[in-house]
Length: 420
Ligand code: GAL
Image (tube, rainbow, N blue to C red; front, side):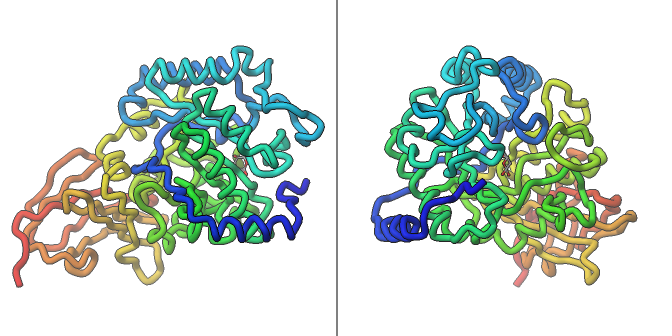
């Protein structure tokens, strides 16, 4: 399957047009990372109208909507046809068996309950799962999605295309960006290219609100050998993002992939044996810290109370949705890299800090403000965002025991500021 089969000549021409275009591709959307649910991690392309409506109802009732998870994103598999567009001329259609009422009716339902609806396509003849793609029909498709009331598009040029030239990928990203802007509906734009061709360096300028930094996540916290086999576990993905934080900010975000919280090793789509409750909590906390979009990947209708409690922690969500939009950086790490401190400044000048124990045994970890955060507060107070407890004030390094694969997530405020 050759999804990006534009001829070299055509791609070069498109890239030149793209580079010379002076149009402003900023859609002013996604000033904080998108939050919601996506169908892929749990269900793959086995999706249907009833499932999506039940997901909406469940997220409404469980408090997930109230907590900010409002995008309901259909991933690949909503389309009627597999195969080339040439064999299926005419507008894209939803599968009439899976979605008998059509996507517009579903969007109306989502909107009536206070949610937004997302959809999926790609720039090739085929999407990654082999459904009909948007190649050469970008404007037509964007207008169609806008007429349905779509609010988010994942536009996927597929992880198998590591070798596609940057100019070609950039041209197709930009073409859809222009099509969405001309559709006159605010549609958040995810340009998904699995972290190839340094997509973070240019995608924001080409109108993308988010882009994946790596290949698909697996349902594992740390599973050595996974990465070589295509999948990234939680720690792989964190490491992948470690040097990319400069590219993320309001309107344009590094996407660490959809959440695995609650999959429990039972995904119909992803590989992986599942993670423990502590590991899922660490994963959620770290995605919040690095300002990734937070798209739940599990079946929300059957989430355990523990997973639901994890996803509903508003103090953690606040770190992700902070208007300053700073992703956390690694502020300190032990020589063997089993202990790391991630930190970021918040809009109110407080700091969010993660003490991450990647090792296999409980560890005593210390946070030294002058060493790790280069902030000269003499006295500070600490809030533990999982215990929901205030601690301090302290005038010495903060020490705490951190379990294997746990992250202590802290928020730190000054009590007395600088002593010069
Ligand atoms: C992959 C993508 C997945 C999912 C899938 C659908 O390329 O990484 O997240 O969207 O395609 O076919």
